Image 1 (cartoon, helix red, strand yellow):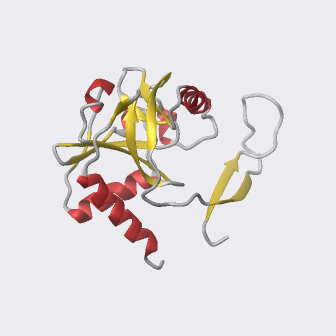
Image 2 (image 1 turned 120 degrees about the vertical axis):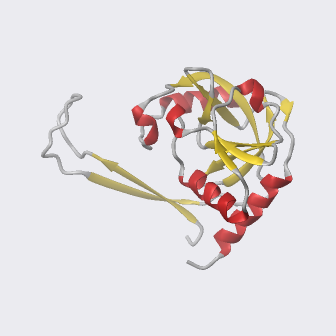
Image 3 (image 1 turned 90 degrees about the vertical axis):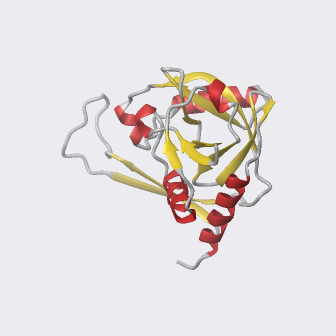
Length: 197
């Protein structure tokens, strides 16, 4: 499987029932290999704002855990609305992330994303895109935004480990603009993936 996704899960290991872990437990590592989805310009998603919220200042938001019931429920809700992905707001009503990735938007040619202090997971592809922007000389900003302002963005895209950079074509049924800045970032990301390790 040359094009695959390796999922690594680390648990505290076997133990007794209950919420209090024993410190002498032996950790368990589970690895699973999955066929990678095709990457390319054909992938585009529509977003639906979820009624489910993430905590604005959740100290666990910076960790990728298996406790993602909010994201699972949000994705199910989005699919029921006919969308591909859910836009999650935090408990302050600010844009945080999607059910499975980070949100970026273009504002006056500046590449913006929500700060991780507002409930967003600090994704790996998110960090790569911020590095790409620096290499390309594009200005970036980690800022708070409300969904009403997000709708006015010059372009919106999602970053996700499995799919890379995914342009958003619609938000809550309304079309979203497409920015040449986003296309520039996607090209640089694709070139980076084709470089030998």
